[in-house]
Image (tube, protein in one colour):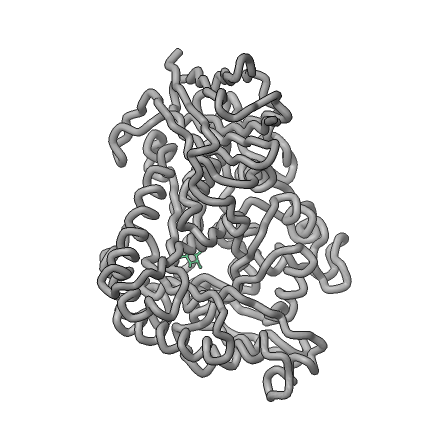
Length: 500
Ligand code: AHR
């Protein structure tokens, strides 16, 4: 059996674990909101119409922050449609997803849902069809204490100031599919002016400028540079979005998707630091990886077909994930944690039904996709400082990324607790992994879990919701400060250890 050697040392600190790494995303798209998180009349619905089964799963998933209300949706959205008495709210065409938006759920409901699920809201602004004034109006409604038209309106709607700190200045503004998409200079100017004006109301907001929609976009690199040249002094973070799929059947490359995420983050950090150097600024820009996931374009129904009926909450991109997808998601989280020195926020897109870890049936059950498990376990066990894991591993040949390490890992270290997260990206071979823990004062294994099945394409469904789950991991031994693990092909594992 091929073997790998890992070394963990508490001195190899990258940065503290950032809870905002465990964010997700709720967009008015398909059934994420309607019959996802919100379904009045459902057997589990609470007094606000929120599905309690989904609220419970959201808490179990360990979500820290949720981005809202889009996504592409936000670029045609009028936030004021979604506040105040429900009977007065207009129905609108949603051009992004070719559906009808009833506005039954809006900002006030979202903030209440965040309070109930214990997550921090991250609001996205419409900079597609709108601009500075509407952003200021939304900020006044959302956060201003009172005594002005919009803060008093919120008060009349029964709400105290929401105190939202984290704001995205638009969404994917480089994408030709985006309503009101822009050149980097057009967008950079608008984002800078919006940010500057918003800070006149609240100087300490955290603001995210749009980076490229993906690292495959034609302007990737120069978009970030040009946008940051306009916005550097006014924003805190720049966004990254990445979706990985296995449509072409190149499973070896798909399993190595985190190599692409590593390079993507490193490139955007380098570009941001280059602009910082040009500006002679000591400020560092963070990465808001506010959309990431596995997404099978081919498996999803096209949504831009004009013949599509204008429906309310139609089924859109309800990808069914398998074990291999879960291993990739676990590895992407390893990449995000490894970049905790620069990744300020990360949002798994999305939360319910739409390329989501949580699935629901209208009027029926809610269940966990295989991808739910690595996310929930990483969020639960990662604590203290993130540690770089020194890794020597056999390699796997991939068409897209060349030779890549089969085993990839990251660790976290807290007072009395060490957690190791690892994947085997080989589709063929199990790997025997030895982990040198001699510098960690480790005393015992508390918990070890694995996501792996004989059938790497196994999935969950409403009739078999727990076919794929995280199972107790037996092939792991601790002796003389050394951990020995047999990691099967296509697997993700986590182990939590006690230390002196
Ligand atoms: O998450 C689905 C869509 O993917 C989002 O609306 C958009 O921002 C991205 O292209």
